[in-house]
Amino acid sequence: MTLVCASCAGGCAAHIPALPPDSSLLEPPESFQRSLEQDVGVNLRRHNRVSLAENGAVFDAIAASIRRARRSVNIVSFIWRPGRPSDQVLAPLLERARAGVACRVLVDRMGSRRFDAEVRPKLEAAGCEVRYHQPRQDDVIERNHRKIVVVDGAVAVTGGFGIWKSWEGGGRKRDEWRDSNAVVEGPVVRDLQRAFEVNWIQSGGLPLPPEDFKEPPRAGKTPAAFVASSAADLDAGDEQTRAERATELLIRSARKRIWIANSYFVPSAQILSMLAAKARSGVDVRILAPGPIHDWRSIRAAQRDGYPDLVAAGIQIYEYQPSMMHSKTMVVDSHLVAIGSTNLDPLSLRQMEEGSLVVEDPALARQLEALLQEDFRWSRRVVRPRAGPFAWASRAVLWLIGRL
Image (spheres, rainbow, N blue to C red):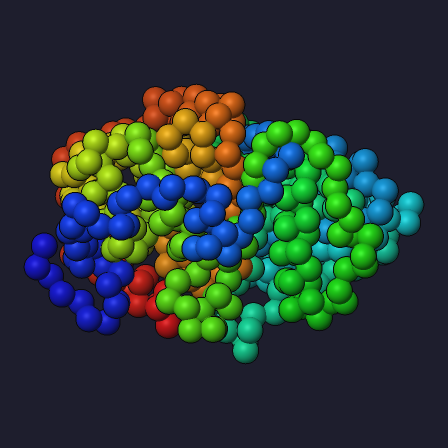
C-alpha cells in the first residue's frame, strides 16, 4: 500500500510494513516465562487456579466471592451504573461492609453515569469507601478501564465486564453483550491487588494494609501473570506500554495458532504486520470482531481498514452478529490464554489503565477454544473485505489521538 499519513506515526494500516522472513519479531522465544519477565516486566507465578465466567455469569461469580469476604473487598470498574447487575453486586457488598469488612470501590466517572446519585450513597451509608479515578494532570483521554474485584487478597475476578445491564444474559441477543471474564485464585492475585492499590493511591486513597498482601494459599498448578498497563509506562521514555509488549510477545510466541477476540480491533501497524507474517508462515490466525451491533460506529469502520491486507495474508476474520462482541481474549497454540480489559486500539494500548491475565493452561485453552468455535458459528466470515476512505480516516484519527 502506498498511502502516507505522517500524523498518525505508523498507526495507520496504510503503513503496514512487510516484515523480513528472518525478523526477530516472528521468532518464538526460547522461554515464554523469561521473555515475559525481561520484555514486559511481569512475573509468571505458579500454583493458581483459573476458571471462566462468561457473560452474565460473572455477576454470580462476583457476588459469591464477596459473600465469603472476611477482611477486604477491593473493586475497580470503568462502568458501574444502577440496575439489576448493580443490585446483585451491592447486596453482598453492603452486608459485608456492615459486618466490618473493609470495602473500597473505585470507578471512572466517564463510564459510571448515575453512580454518584444512586449507587454511591448506598455504599457510603454501609461504610464502604468510594473514590473516582483521577486522570494524571487532568488528562481526559487517560481513563481507568480496568475491571478488577479482589476479595481478601486471595480470589479475584477480571475481564471485560461492566456492572450494568449490557452484561446480563448469554450474549446471543441484541441487548446482551458477549463477553469473557476469569475467576482466579492463588499467588497471582497479589498482582491484581497491587494494580488496584496503585489506582487507589492515585485517586487519593491510602496504601492498603499489609494483611491485604499476605501470600495467598496455593490453589492449583496453573502459571499465571497479570499485565497491568498504563500511560505511565511511557513516562520513563519507553516507546511501548506493557500492554503493547505483552500483545507482541503473545503473537511472537505462536507456532501453530493465534485466535483473537477483541471488541475494538484497531491495533498498531506493527501488530497487524506480525499477524499477517505469522499467517503467511502457516500459523492459523483468526480474528473475532464486532459486527453490525457496535457502540462506536467510527471504531468499527477503523477496524475494517486493516481487513484487506489481513485476509490477503490468509487470516480468517469473523464479525459477530447477535450482539455487541465485547470480549478481549487470545488463545495461542494449545496452552496460552490471555483474558482481561485490554482492547487492541490505541487508547486502550497506550492511554488507559488496563489489565490482562496471561495464563499457561492447556485445559483453559481448550475451554476458550470451544467458546470461540461457537462464537464463529454466530458470526459472518469476511471473505471479500473493502475499506474505503472513512475506514482509513477513522483509523488515522484514532491513532493520532492514541499517540498524543
